Amino acid sequence: MLGILSERADVWGEIRLIASPRSAGRKLTVRGEQVEVVALGEDAFNGIDVAMFDVPDEVAAQWVPVAVSKGAVVVDNSGAFRMDPDVPLVVPEVNAHTARVRPRGIIANPNCTTLSMIVALGALHAEYGLSELIVSSYQAVSGVGKAGVDTLRAQLSAVCGTELGAKPGDVRRAVGDTLGPFPAPIALNVVPWAGTLQEDGWSSEELKVRNETRKILGMPELPVTATCVRVPVLTTHSLAVHARFENEVTVAGAHEILAAAPGVVLCDDPAEEEYPTPSDVVGTDPTWVGRVRRSLDDPRALELFVCGDNLRKGAALNAAQIGELLAGELRR
Image 1 (cartoon, helix red, strand yellow):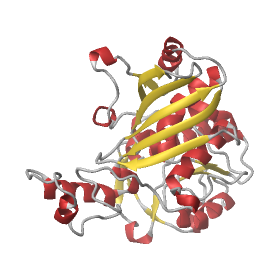
Image 2 (cartoon, rainbow, N blue to C red; image 1 turned 180 degrees about the vertical axis):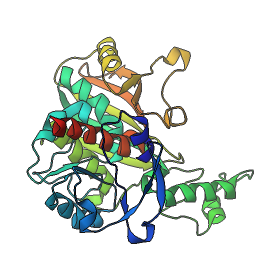
Image 3 (tube, rainbow, N blue to C red; image 1 turned 90 degrees about the vertical axis):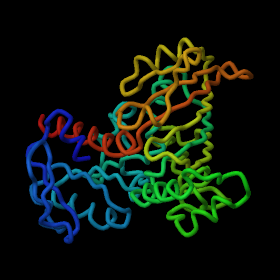
C-alpha cells in the first residue's frame, strides 16, 4: 500500500500511518518522506477524511465505526463489512457509481480472489450479459500472509535437489511440521482448499467468490460455483473461468472488449505461446487475460484464463483506487 500510494498521482494531503502500539514511533517512507507511525486510538482519526483499513476482521469491526464517528469515510480491506447491505462493495472499473451511496460511511474492498477476475468479467458482462459463472482458482500462498510465503520457502528448501514427489507421502514426511497455514504440503503439490469450512463442504473462500461477484455486479441470483485451490506460487492468483452469457459470444468480440477494458491486459496468442502466467504477471497492476475460447458445446459461453497480483489489484491497489474516487468527491 505504501508503495502504491507513492507511485500514483498525489491526490492526498497529509498521509497518516496508524498501527498497533507496538509499532508506534517507527518511521516509514511514503512519497519520499519519512512518516512516524501513530498508535491506534480514537484520537488517531481526528481530522482524517479517508481512512483505509488493512487489518484483521475483528480489528476492523471494532475500529471502523470509530473512524466513521470521527468524520472519516472508511475503505475497509477486511471481510467484516463486505456483505453488509448498507456497505457498497466497490471495484472502480466495474461499479464506481456505488461508492457514492454509503449509509454507514464505509466502502468495502473485495477479496483478492474475486478481484483477480472481476475487472475482466465486468467488461464482458457489460456487453454480453452474464448468466452463469463457474471458476477454479489457483491461489498464491501470499493470500494467507507472510506465514504462507515463509512456509512455501521452507518446504522448497526441504525438497530442492531431492527425488521426492515420486512416492505416496514422501513430501509430507520430508516437510514434517512445516505445514504452516496449509492442511497439506504446498511444495511439489496443490491443495484443494482455501479458507475455512462452511456448510455442506464449501470453503469460505469459495463462498466469497460467489457472494462478492453477485454483489459487485448487482445480480443477487447469479449462479456462481467456485473451487479454490492453493498452488506453490508466491504471489499472483490465477483462475480458469467458464462464463455463460445471455447473448451469443465470439472470441473476436471478446478480444475487442478485453483489449479496450480499463485495468485489463489481453495476452492471448497460443500459437506463439503467449498467455498469462503468475511469474510474468506478479508485480503488475492489471488483470491479465488469455486462453480465450468459445465453449465447444455452447455458443453463449466463453472459457478464459485470468491472472492478477493478489497483493496489488487484489488488495492494496483497489483500495487506493477507491480512496482516489473519494478524494475527487471530497475536493468538489
